[in-house]
Length: 422
Image (cartoon, rainbow, N blue to C red):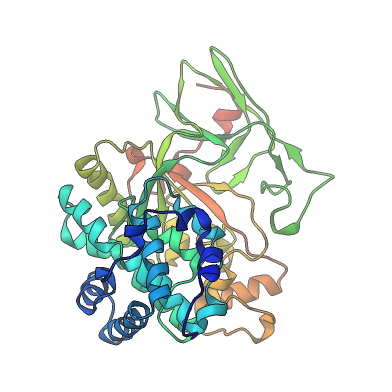
């Protein structure tokens, strides 16, 4: 690691605007979040092991005893934890410190992330968030630090992970059992309708999406269907909606439905609030635990955040690749999880999830990839047979949460939709 950072290098890292903060905010004699006691407390709350805590205390001391590194650390902390005008996503424009700090760059950013723990802890206490939920939420920091150590040999996080972690460390995201939840606007190009009598749900595609004959979005995985592909249509007026239906198994149907609004109510449109589901690494995706997480979320957000309403749950992930229903055992957690949701197609390349499945960002030769788990074997066999890796999406509405019952598949009546029979 270099002994000193120059002012020019700091300017390149943060930009001149950041360096224009009040002088007193950058000349702290002691940065509390770099003291051994603060590092230990923040790490312990986030679930770090003793060896990692000791390592990060050592790194914090190196930063605290270097005037320019300390100055840089204060600015990073201030912008991410204290500034009301700085967007965490602007971090992506920062210059990585790898060329300046080598293998210690990740440790620097990890300490910045951990510096926010006292702020979010105070917020959680003000909302009476249970201690167990707060700790589970912070723990994603240690999971990403372990992932970084596996790849780089030292505890840290990559610069591009910082915006994600600040969902956890700013009071937006919560881990409730196996799953994580964050309120967001619905960002997918679909609308959902519910039959007022039999409660069936149907999802319709927005206008103008081109699909292949297999019901996937044209171009997904680099595959196009110029001859048999088709474009979705959506039309709504005062008494009915006409559009392209999505089957709950995760594919668009090459036909149109005509839904009278006296019988069908709209329950989700783009932009409305939903709870996004995220599936953290670190433990098996236990089927029963996932169902319990969803039930917890339905109780948690109205109880602790009555100001954060939501229409339903949405998840987009490589784990929702519907090909897994052919590649994996029907009793696998992934397959069972998928079948509880209303699945929909998403656009993706042909490598969705590859790095996560094989714990590597650089898989060059799949013939040499490990086959030591059922998922890895299934993926390699599926690709060898001509498949590719794509992602997928899923919806679930609180009214329909009846875990293990596969509600959307069971109640989807394609014939009645097509004929317009109410």
